[in-house]
Image (cartoon, rainbow, N blue to C red):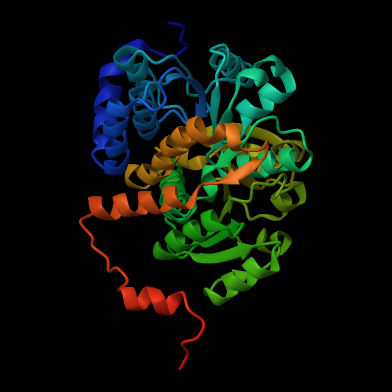
Length: 418
């Protein structure tokens, strides 16, 4: 079995951490139990480009239990947990190609290694597998029945491909499931982003001005948690509806050009490029802390920052200090990559339980329905979304009401009014 990881000797440690995470993933465990009996993915090869974390290990084990042959590579150079990678290789015999801190050349070599398995399905977090196949490995397309996409940034890229009529196989946007983005993006990103910033800096948030670029579900989650820590939150938005919502939620809203001068902490979560640019870095207070929690580090114009800097040094693990020509010091966390995975451990396992349940069930759905799907991006079928919500509530010991026959009739009628 081919693999490329940091150290196989970390396997025992990684196995224990996976075990700990799975204690909070009852929905995925129930799916794994069924998959072990039914083998719905038997005979299918699957390439997965995901953050190699304890929670991802639970998903990969579930896919393998369902009969799939899985090859795994990292979807971000800094997100790999090396002990988890070792455990998957040593304990589960799953080929993993991921090393925390790998350079760009190694990152793409690992993607090619995962694709060497000639997958029939892809599972992406950021669409790097899909884009690589379409641009460099088109010979693989004839064998692929479909794929899934985990995150907002990837869905944006894939919808662009579909709109341009270049997408060559159907993709299910797992990110769009209510049981994914309403919980993973909001509560998962909210907690893990703050966790990463605090671990990297050990700075107090209370009383600070905390600038958040982007008020989607991820931005909402970070704003909620930063407020809980006592920070004064400022929202930067380009969408008038989201900006209005932020105002109604009690936050100050202003352009980044204005926020740059008053912020102590900055976090980008937009999925777009150069959200914080050279002129914004120049306007910041000395000592400002800048992080990104969007999928790619392109949200920060780090080249522009380097151009106006006379010195840079790693002053603390995950904290790079840039000394500007003006003498100001700007601190960038985690190389501008996902701070919640660069400096922390990513989303809590209990919220990834639902996200990865979507991934597993959508893979099963593709095996069953791919022949009926067009070459475009689909939302998660409602029945899968609702089933996961039911399973999660049951695992939490929470019961809900059901409609009576009379109530169902009323909701389905137009004759009955006041």
